[in-house]
Image 1 (cartoon, one colour):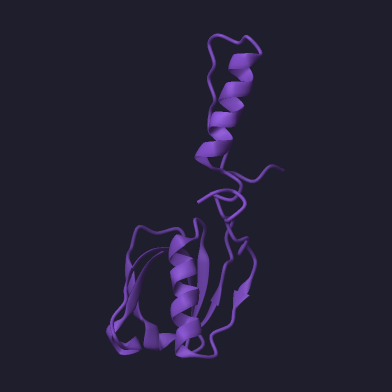
Image 2: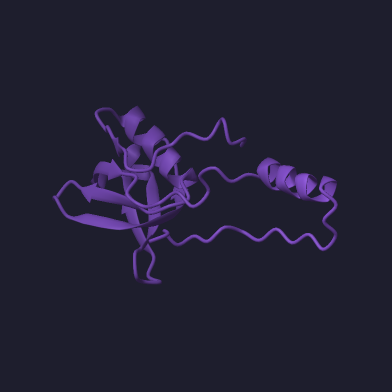
Length: 127
C-alpha cells in the first residue's frame, strides 16, 4: 500500500451501527499497525494489538484475536461481543513504505555517499 493510500485511523473511534460497519471496522483494525481498544457489550474494554481474525458467514461465526497491551496472552473475542472500536495506539506503519525507503536510498546514492545505511525510524514517541 502506498503512503498516499494509507488511511490515517490513529485516534479515531469506529462507528459500529450495523453488522457491515462492524466487519469493515475490524478489517481495518486487523490492517492497523498499532493498538486498538475494543469495548465489549458488557462495557468492559480490552486494549492491544489485533493480530488475527476469522470471518464467518454470520457475526456469531466470526472472531478476532488480540494480544492485550503488556502481556503475551492471546484473547479471542466473538464479533457478537464487540460494541465499540477505537484506534487508540500509534500506527507504527503510518508514513512508512518501501517506496519511501528506496527514495531515501537513491537520494543518498546520487549524493555520492558510499556506505549507505538506512535504519528504521524509532517506534518510540519522541519526548
